[in-house]
Image 1 (cartoon, rainbow, N blue to C red):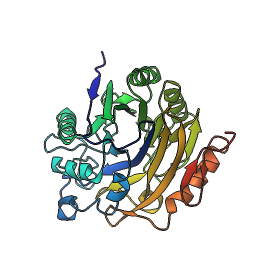
Image 2 (image 1 turned 180 degrees about the vertical axis):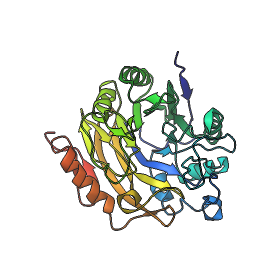
Image 3 (image 1 turned 45 degrees about the vertical axis):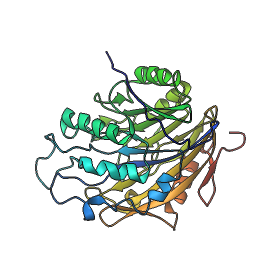
Image 4 (image 1 turned 135 degrees about the vertical axis):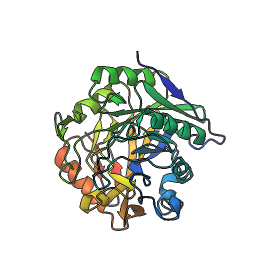
Length: 341
């Protein structure tokens, strides 16, 4: 039997109007790892998010995907050698950097959340709870954020049994319906799709990567919106992907790498990220948004990108993949529903 985890954080000061919600969201966040040694950022990460914190803080609610656990314990079987080791474990003390940067909601549903076993899953959850950051990820979990008398639900998915599963569509639909019954707005996040520089396009049908079924993402996103989701946020391919509007709700198919220090290939499109701003009306419909371009420098230091590469990339991909149902994207990054779509 699946268990339901309900988490609530009550803001002291109301931060948004009761009839709208302005969200900012980013993709993968991994602020450095203790395994293998030598991959923690300068100054123990204290200033890693300085340049982009203002983008994260300027929102009613801010979301990120935690690509790996916040943990000081546990063991991993993923590292056969120091040169072929892609198991992530960020120190629990790094959680405060995420909180101070403005993050309110996180997904723990991804292919690195279990890198150091169940002990690290629980330690991550305890760390986030202590910081007042709401999470979703394990089977049956729904995160709840309360502000100004309104309830925001988060349901996070991945393609594995240790998480709410993208590939278990009936269960996903039931869980989103359950969340919608108890929340004013419901945000669904998913970690799915193929990975790398060749994975920028949204595939119609099942996506495979290294022999794994990484989800039929179009079917999944449409199904969870039919079930009551008001916004769907994607991450996992490590590159930006297209936007789509379905039944008045925005789908962001991948927000790319945002702050991934030390162990990620950041060449070309892998180093381009964005902060996605989305405004939802009282009934959950998408009213407007904006792509705020970022990039990573050096070993993975996120910076604002004045050249705006992310805007051009997402605009092109949206026109290719969703010519009829994609939103309008202006050159300044403003995103609006297309009339007649």
